[in-house]
Image 1 (cartoon, helix red, strand yellow):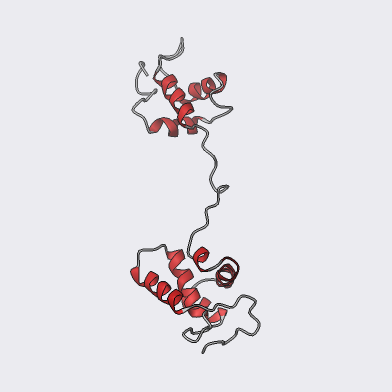
Image 2: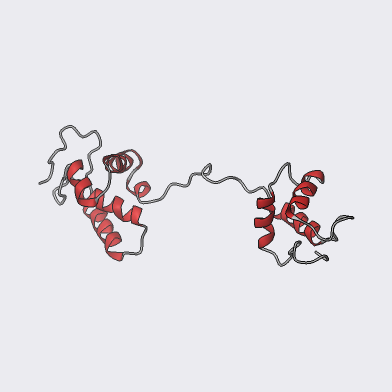
Length: 164
């Protein structure tokens, strides 16, 4: 029951009645991410309070089909960062590359793509646009793939016809 296997635990989970009710409501709603529901289930199983089950990490892993690292990380996060932080996904600003084309640069690219093609060319190609945006110092560097993705959002299709 409560307290089973907690003698060697560095991060012991003890939930209040309100926290348990909130986790049970969260699980019951079914409108949350699988990751969040798994965290809630881990906390409920690991809870060593009088209302908790106080399961060992290995028993939680087997029951929830997760890993020991996940269970340990959820315990640690609860103790170190608090209940609310455990239920919120962390935003990692370095997980996504910063956008090359902000609003002003994107507008310049669109204007360029919608302008007449350079002399000797029937229409703008993505490679030509790639070279021209660097030449005009709109951006330091860009791939034709990035140019294509950026232009895809507009009605201006430089490769559709000669007029741009």
